[in-house]
Length: 463
Image (cartoon, rainbow, N blue to C red; front, side):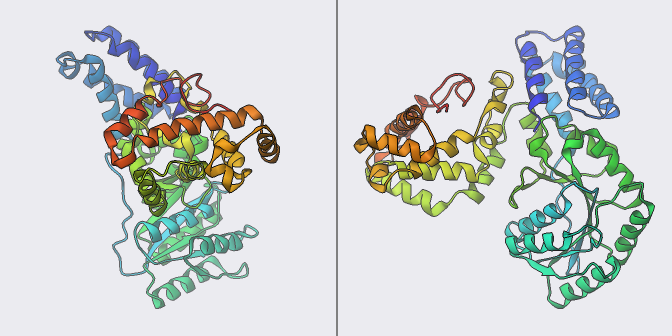
């Protein structure tokens, strides 16, 4: 997400950071570039106008001219205004209510609302430590109820069974009574996808809202619809008292117009952002972290939190002890590291959160491809355990068998073995727990600006 916007802005800021002095002329030139970049990112015109006015007001004043580094001062202003545009901080769910706290989900057809109910239920259970029940009041879409039941089973939360023959109001009332009886903390009510112009359906969800009196009414919207997402959210908000927005399919949107427009147009905060299809692909929306990502400064906090949640600590500890004892780093260990990386959303997700991405050539970060890591895993899976533990036994006939079994080429296998040797050298420097040696070893193996797969250089493998 934001790939195109990040590329455009990084180019603009590079021109500024080299200048000893910023005057009104070069600031206005930079602002024109920023305006063009925002419009190309499908940010709503009123939002762009207000944003540029605010940045301009601060940039041409004392704030930049008195700075020792005017270019960096300008970037800080842009970052601060991006945060202000999306909200000053993460807007948490307000679940302070006599249980069950009811969350009512609304949205257009096809926005991914039912899937988001499953994701939110999982997040509330795992991260907020709440007991959760979900219910579907969508009696119009075939298999909507069954879809939510499948998701509830997957994320291990309570499912209240409903039927297409019932009315949404009766379903909601019965689910609320059952949640109260079972002392459930949170009840999430999925509603039918609708169009803002459909008065009958909008009337129905208004009645549901009046009956349930939810603590949160969340509008689920597809980020790929750009500024239309913000306009649709506003239309819903005129009928329904929304408390927040969840952006879905943000991983497929390289522009980011919805994220930058929603709060300004609706006055409602983005509370969560969906970054993939899996049930764990839902993140709280942090404006400061998103602004940092847009400007190529990375998001180490989110990366650390993700590692805390998704990295298998037992396996990581086992590997650390093994290396400390000097037992080596074999291909089975290498495969485990590849799996851990994929659990964190793949290398492209990690790269997106690393600082310094703005220094990459335009578009380089978007070229990172996880398919090569899946190919590496397939090659290792085609080996016997003896071959994984001791790759030196691999002769010509063994290599042919492995590549035929994994559907790869001999040169792919040779690249993997070379990469493994490099990793072994780094791991050897960790023997005895010498972190300083390990970091020196990494220094020689870290990719430069072109070192990401497809970026044309460095030591990461390129299949």
